[in-house]
Structure formats: C-alpha cells, structure tokens
Amino acid sequence: MKIGLFFGSFNPVHIGHLIIANVMQDRTDLDEVWFVISPQNPLKKQKSLIHEFDRLKMVELAIADHFYFRASDVEFHMPRPSYTIDTLTYLSDKFPLHEFKLIIGGDNLTHFHKWKNHEVILEQYGLYVYPRPGELNKIDHPHVQFVEAPLMDISATFIRKTIKSGHSVKYLLPQEVEDYIKDKKLFL
Image 1 (cartoon, rainbow, N blue to C red):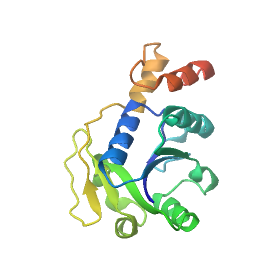
Image 2: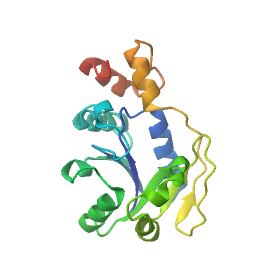
Image 3: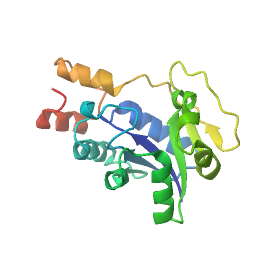
Image 4: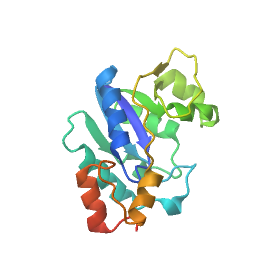
C-alpha cells in the first residue's frame, strides 16, 4: 500500500488540511493519507501548541468519516524534537509492506535542503508537493511529484486568533473540531 504522510502540528486541524489531504489521496496513486501529529516541530515554539493529545483527538474527529485517512501519534513515542527522516525510517521498519511518500507544501521547498538527511528523504521516499500561496520554488527531481490542488491560505494562527477574539470560525473547521474546541475551552 502507498501511504502519503502529511506531517503537521494541526494546532488545530482545519478545512485547508482536509482539502489538501483529500486532493492528494484522490488525484494521486496514494492509497491512504496519514496525518502525523508532530508533538514538537523543531521550527516552532512549543508554548504556542496545545497538548498533543488534544491535537490528535481533533484530527481523529475531523477525519472520522473518511475511509482513506488515518491519524498517527507515532511521533509521540519518539525522541523530541521530531525529525521527518527518523519518523520515515521508523514507519518503514514497522510497516515494511507499505511505501511511504512525504506530502509537503511548495513553501517548504525553500528550506528543504536544510532538513536532516533531505537527500535520503528524496531518494528513498520522495515528495508529493501541493501549491502554497507565494510559492516560487521547484525541485527538478524524479522523486518529486507536483500535484495540482487549490491554493489554501488558511492558517491555524489565524484560526487561533479568531477564537481568542471571540469571532466565528464557521467553515474554517469541521463542526466536530469546533465543538471540541468550545467544550475544552482551547485557544482562549
């Protein structure tokens, strides 16, 4: 089975994430898309993140009705900060019959050469790249596939600020995620 790994903080998961994941699964040769919740991204401040189990629960709620999506807490059990290559290696060892591909936004290509073992990621796994607003970078490599997808300029930062200010996030989040945030009083 060919699995697309969609890494992120998902702080919170929003409709843009779901649209991109759906396009990747529907318009490529990926059998499934796994949302890999990163407990600590080496490039983000830890204090801005809500608890990893709340972020996992929101992803589970958001994808509950999608047969080809999975939520993964694999990085919760790994050393921190999490590096993509380490997670890819672990998953490849644990699921030797699966082929893993990395799903990233085109904006990540700017700094991809700075990622730990980026050459190994390219050669052994490959990238499925979706467009991001303002993106100009392209990598000409046989293991990089650019996938036509809607330009999604929805940010979790905007959603957190909107919640904190008491404004509506309707249509930005799945209803189940919005209800969970309200019930748990997250991002206030």
